Amino acid sequence: MSSETHLSPVATGEPSAPDTGEWVGELLLGGPERELALHLGAPLDRRALRELVDQRERELVAAGLAPGGSVSLRLPPSLGFVTVLLAAWRLGTQVSLLDYRLTQHEVDQAVARLAPQLLVQPAGPVSGALRALFDVEPVYLPNPAGVPAATPHTLIQLSSGSTGPSKIIGRTAADVIAELDRYNAIEGIPQRGERAVVLGSMVHVLGLVGGLLHGLNAGVPMVVPPRLTIDGILKALADGDAPTTLIGVPSQAEVLAAVVDPPALPGFRRMITGGELVRPELWRALTEGYGITLGNMYGMTELGVIATDIEGAHRPELTPAPGIAVRVVDGEVLLSRERSPYLGLVDPTRWADGWLRTRDAGEVDAVTGRVVIKGRLDSQVSIGGLKVDLTEVEQTLADAPGVEAAVVLYDEGIKAYVSVSADAAGGAVDAWLRERLAAYKRPRAVHVLPAMPRTSSGKLLRDRAALRAAAQRVADQN
Image (cartoon, rainbow, N blue to C red; front, side):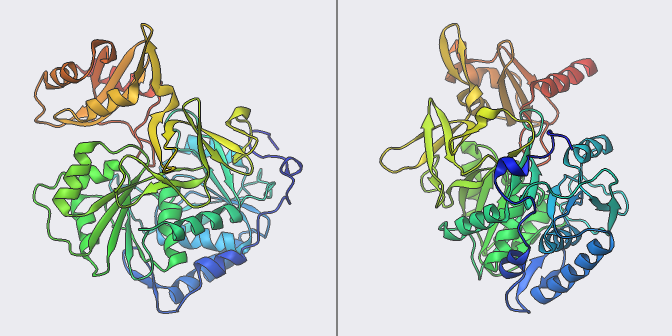
């Protein structure tokens, strides 16, 4: 077994098998039989959900999975994903999540790193760039090289890879339960009697815990629109009288903001975004155009939800979630965590003495305790001896007329990558930057791309090599 994949159980000081699945039945599958649990294309009550999970558990056992085993799910957002996940956890196995959009080469690499005993994937190919929900039948593929769970982690996820190779991150059942408790304690998070329309992928932490698991735990039906189009999102928001919260990332908020004359949506109360900073113009477009509040949530795959401003009352400041201690050392945000979340080989300085280094720049208000996230720590660069915050440059560029998305990096000088609207005026961006930024802060080059590359979770890709390659493809076509 490779050290790239698993931590030694001896090193963790904990039992080598995942926590039992009792918490799944108690916290996620309990509740009144006829209470609406999910709306994944059609309504599903808790009784029907429990029956489907029972069926999936029998299928997993028949495929050879047993308590203490390991399984990887490579399923698209679907009822199949939800029921197999819950069944595997209730069985007491370790579940790793793979994005269904990975290529076969990437899947093979992930399986080699994770060594699951079972790989669950769709019976046939799935496609559709704007599909948010699929109807798939899972198939169970034994992995001859797979091994039982070697650590107590219930959930294994791969980091988004927005800045480089993915890290393997493990969370125990206790970690997940603690995050659910944090959600329940955060004022403004949807509770019973409300509903949540979730646009974020269930493979990633915002959609998984903030949407699916919190919804099941708190009695908040999770609604997933079949398609992530304007019509699909608006229909999901309109199909219900209960107070509704929309959960997604800023790129999905941009879809709503593009509506010239938004319809009346009486139940639509707020949107909560996570993943990256929201540009001021997007905030104004949504709050004024729809008459809602736009809240923000800061989190990491390693820990889940960390700090929030659900009602947008303190923008850009965020209040740390209950039970989360935040401090800033040398400009970097550090978070309290009892043990390292990483499995396998990783930079040993990322976690030490109970503190996780986020690699995010920020500051904490000594009076209120609220935190401001200023972007990645490596966004602070020196140009001719003068300090430049690349986040400031990026935000200024993102606010320029016609700019839809922007990434600013230091790559032998400040370089920018943007996508622009069809009606963007030539030279307008350059004039905008000259008026607002000193010469030493302005990008040496602004590369216009037809669409900004994004990770599978919707975050803007910040990998230098990938962005250089995208810009080169555009240059080769011109």
